[in-house]
Every structure is written in structure tokens, then in C-alpha cells.
Image (cartoon, rainbow, N blue to C red; front, top):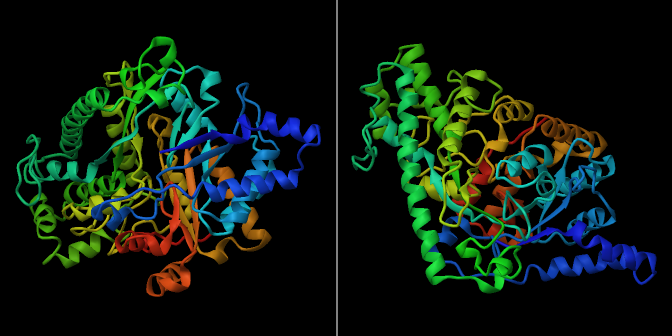
Length: 517
């Protein structure tokens, strides 16, 4: 991915000098920004058929541009270019760049208004990052406070230090729902393939604590495999894929005489991300509620249901997808504590491992849109998912063909999401929310959305982004793509033209819960 860093910060001295010397007007500066945005959409890359099926519409792959936030002293850094870069985004409505607005408790009201007006325009930009947990996450990597305050976003949601950090962000996607299969079935997939250690199964667990211990053991085993593979790949990159040109732009490489693949950069990391955390959490909630609390279903029955893709277990399927089972995303501590357990289990099994470049591993908790592709090759799960359905997306609640599991509205989702310490995921978190156009319309809708964002920032969620588009509009575009060629939607950490997305990804967007205040 390409990141343009904090462009409103590093470009501002040149802009300020030209304005003061009357070499430039604000209007012409805006025009230059808009032309630049159009130009940023020229690069693209070829993709294989499998990628296009579920991950089309991404352009070159990650042109993030970060604005706003605090300066190195912790003061608000908003300036004219912050506003102009948002305005240019609204005027051009292009897929790129992926605008990211850094926010904090002292973000100016004017910037909040302009940010929300862009969000309400319904083209998927910008995404929002919260300085408090993001800076805390950067500090956990060992950077200084001044450096941490200068973080930018790379790709979708990965915080990084421009010119100082080679974090190998997005180094691998981890299908935690697949790991949960081993917990259910004694180290074997539901279709009988023995691929992991036998840490118990639904037919042998006597207590729920044994289930949680099994989860921890499986995650430790599979993250061992993951990190070993990534370290081998890291060493191969050093041998066959050195990057001398890019290395010249990073502090430390010229001074040490080492390529960035050899550890020449000041800060080095490896950052894989966990996918399907809510799928695992709601699966645990099903087990805890039905098998141990109510004692209404045996472990053998639950295991048989998912092995048979819920066929012959229609009543159980309906029950698992109903509100009678506590589900993450409804501000229910019963379910949210299980999400917190899954989140922390993944992070602790990644954080701090060593890589060949002298750095450490850094966990992320997000899927971008890989939850769709992963779901295609994942068996049924005890959250009420059937074979081939997407696993849960990013930090969001589960939504299956049987129904969305979050039924208590957007404030409940925020309360659930903020019960975890986002800074533990130092490679970033991602939260998608979708509102129909009328839910945020008018002055009242604008002010409600601003207040909603303020509350999310105060509760220390790291990231949030919005799709302001109804399911009906997306269904119409799916049925009549020629009439909606320029319709941008927020997919995950990026925006894309809806009609260019593969149908599985389009369906995933349509089925996401439509929220109202």
C-alpha cells in the first residue's frame, strides 16, 4: 500500500509561504488538490480471477492520506489544508485517495462539521481515527511520544511512522473461525481433516472453562505456525526481494548501510491481523448458554448441527440466530466479555514475538473484506453461520443469512466495541457502520452524527467509518449496474465502485445491519 502520510502537515509550510507571499490563492490551492486527487486514481494493478471474485474494486491498493490530529506537542494540528483536502475529496468524489481524519477530544467543531458533511455525501470518505488509543498503540511498539503523535495511516487502518517504520503491515490474515473449528472438534475440521492438536471437543468438555482453555491452546498453536511461516518469508524477501530504492526514503538505512529488508529501518515489525473475532465470540456464547447455563442441548448435538450445516436442526438454527442467545454488539456483558476474551487471546498470542529484522510482531483485528473470501472456505459455525457465508467483518457484530445479531442500535454497538482496549491491536482495528440516507439527513441528523462520533472518541474506540446508503439503493445497483456506475460505497478501510465488486462482497455489504438513531 501507498501512504501519503500527514499531507496537511508536511505540505503546510509551502502552502503558508505561498499564501503569505501572494503566489497562491486558497481557491487555486483547492483546484491543485482536486487535480491531484484525480491523478491519484490512475495507477492500477492486475489481479487474478480468485482475487477479483471477492476483492475487486480496490484500485492500486491503499492510497491513504492522513489529515488532522495532534502535533508533536499534543496540540491540535488542524490547518487550512486539513479543510481544503476534505473539501477536495467531496468535490471530486473519487475512489482515491482514502482520506483519514485523525480526531481527538479537542478536535475543532468546524472540522467535525466538514468531516460529517463529507460522510453524509455518501461516497464512503473519510474514515476516522482516534488519537488516544492510536498513540497508545504506537507507544507499545517502543517509539517516542513525539514520534507516536506523528503517526499516519497506511492502507486501510494500519498506524505507522512515516519514514521511520517498516512494520510489514497486513502481513497475513488469520481466520480465527477456522481455529475455532479445532476447538469444537478435537483438532480436526468439521469435515474430518486432522490438522491441529487435540485440545478437546464439544463431546468431551465438562466445563466452560475447559472450552476457553482449549481456545487459548489452539490459538497458541496456530499463531506459532503463522509467525514461523512469516519469519521464513521475511528472510526470503531479504534474499530475493531487496528494496534499495524504497530504503533510501527511510531513516536508518543509509546510515547503517542496510536495506529495509535487513532491518535497516529505525523501527521494524511484522503485523498479521485476526479475522472473524465476533464469529468466535458468538459461537462461545451459544456453547455457554445452551450447553452449560441452560443445559438444554448437549455438546454432541451442537457439534452434529454444524457438521451437518444445520440441516435437520432448523429449530436450533433459528434459536442460535435469535435474541434468546446473547450476542456481541448489543451492549450485553454476557456476550461482550466473550468478544473481549477472543480479542485479547488473539492479541496476546501475537504481540511481542521476534522477527528477523530485530523487531517484534504487532497484532491487528480487522478483515478488510477478506471475511467474504475466508467464509467461502469455512465450514458452518456455532454463531449461526452456514457453509460459505462470510465470517464476521472486522470489529463488527455477526450478521448471517439467519439475521443480524445486533438488534439494539448504533449506541449499543459502540458500547460493546469499546469494552476492549483497542491499543492492544497495535496494527489497528476497523469498525464499519451503515446508516440509510434519511437517518442522518438535515441539521438534526448532522448534529446527531457529530455527537455519536464524539461519544465513540470519548470511549476510546480506535477507528470507525460509515456507509450512508440504504440496502434498497445497493440492491437497485446490483440489479441495474449500468445506472449506478459512479456509486461509491465504503467496503472496509477503503471505498470502491459498488458495481465493480464481486457479488459475494456486494451481498455482504447489503446484509450489514442498517442502523438508525
